[in-house]
Image (cartoon, rainbow, N blue to C red):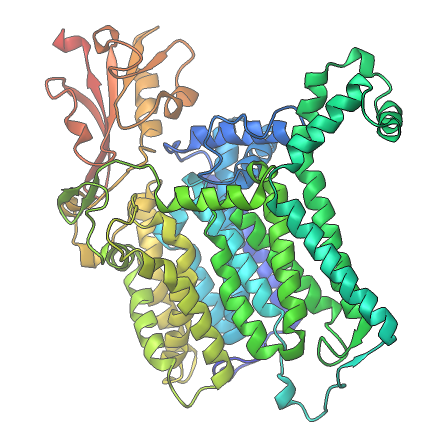
Length: 640
């Protein structure tokens, strides 16, 4: 691997084939772990909505539903992962006996962590030695906060996977050696076409890009197309249009106008996007063919172009999960300008165009008016309508009352201590003059860009909740810095024993947390937060009420036949019903039914204090981990 911060430590290096085999074995082991643990996790509060969103998106993609007919507000986030999880979850559940749809979706969610770990390793291998990269990838995978969210989080872990994939592929497109570092001189830039054709190229570019901009920006195309379609359906359009319509719709007499208009609304966005994309790509290819040397030595190579395009697709799909993903374009564009020189324009255009195409194609809400609807989504994201309470350091806060250090402190309390210490050491080592300048600049740019969302959270009134789960995609910066710190420590020792001891010290807190908290790893706090139950009286624990599944297992074994089970207010019946005995009826406490008719109630700590519901009802069973009471089953019959 080129451009490592320091030389690889002594020893017999693995061949590329051997290392590829080890990577394949590691991925296989992670998949086996997911299949082994897949049925242990409960349903998060957000999961039922994502299942519904995924099913509706599948219908939209098949042309069976209009893009504006979704149960989830499509401005809040795109549906691409909800769709992938729904389709993949059904497939996995069908292959695994005893698995339900929720289990299959949990496995799909978990595969996001597998992908993220793989690309974390690839990114580390660009800058760090093999031993350091493997150890950092292992620490990344065994972080309790990441592992716990992997099975239950249908948004933030997939978003981490897509953004890290896009970032890594984009960085791999950078050259191994800068032009100034090579002995040879690249060919000068020169035209390959005559002056007359140059003007044709310029005029054609203006027309193509103007047409693309008009297609994407003007919102009147769909009403215009619908008006033309209606005229053709009634036979009042100009003769050529009528002829084309009759040719394409030979059974028009048996299909209603409303049906045709609905089909047009469904596919119009795809047609418009495809036309604009074709014009943009054709323009780019025309310029690339007309000028020699514009992409640097020998032109922009196919491998580099494929990596840039892959990066753009991943970032575009990430944007169709959460609209903040274009932030990942920032460090890549800066690095392309600094390192690709004359090919920076080509790479930048390919990166941005492929990201736009992938995003709009995967997000039906953008089909009708891509720019306006995307800006609407950003507006909703910046003022997200969430009004719940937040527990932070023993205080119950209203939304917007968090201190400016809310996110940094939670990251410091929920990441294992060795990674935090190594990251601090790595930040200091990043400025070391003994290390190669170029990789240090690349890492500094990447870490700086990934730190921007955390810095933005300092603004008063920022909407943040559920600890720092929305910022999981920023963690690769922390692990890159930890890798630098780890190599700085390893450089002080000789032999294998110190490295093995350090590996145990780095991995042990995470692995111990996984074992101690399973299957509620996402409630992990390190020693800085304290120990025992005092931690969970000051900070959030099972805020998604995934412990309902374990509570329901007890109810299934002990509830009388045909009993009514009430679910507490910090949760929904959809979190319990998939695991209930067929004869049991699940209702929501005080909403779907009068609690007086229920035999048992399941309550969850949720956002804190919710276990105090029904204080006069005896507690029959408690789900707890590490001193934290997460859920309880209460007897309602004894209080009547």
